Length: 196
Image (cartoon, rainbow, N blue to C red):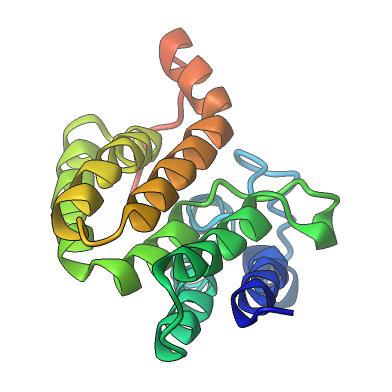
C-alpha cells in the first residue's frame, strides 16, 4: 500500500474520533447530540458543556487535521499525497465511521490542516472570521465565509501546488454542505447568536 494512502486512511480514522462527544461524556452530563445544535463540534460543546470543554474540543479537532498532513510532509510525499492526507481527517470528522457517518461540520479539523499548509492564510482568515463574528454574532457566518475564501488564499500563498487548491475547494464544499441547516436558519432569522 502506498504510504500516502496509509496516512490518508489513518487520517480518516483519527478524524472519526468524536473528541467533543468523548469529552462531554467524561466531564459533564451533556450529550451534545441531544442538546443545542445537536452537533459534536467545539461550538456546540462550548454552548452546552462549558467553555473549557469547548476549547479542548477545538484543540483536539484541530489536531486531528494537523497530525496526518504533518506526518505526510515529514515523509516528503508528493503534494497530491499530502493533500489526500489532509482530506482524510476532514472526511472522518464529517462522516465518522464510529458514529454512523453522522459527524461534525469540519471547521476545526480544516483549521488544523490549513495550519500545516499555510499558517499565513490561517492568520488572515482568523481576522476575517473574528470580524464577521464580532459584527453579526453568528459563528456559522464566519465559518462559511472563511471556508469560501480560504481557496483564494491557498491559491495565492501555495500556488506551487494545484493539489492544495483542489484540497481547499473540497474542504470548502464539505463545510458548506454541513452548514445547510445553519443557512436555512439564517434565512428564517432563527440562527443561534454567539454569546461568549
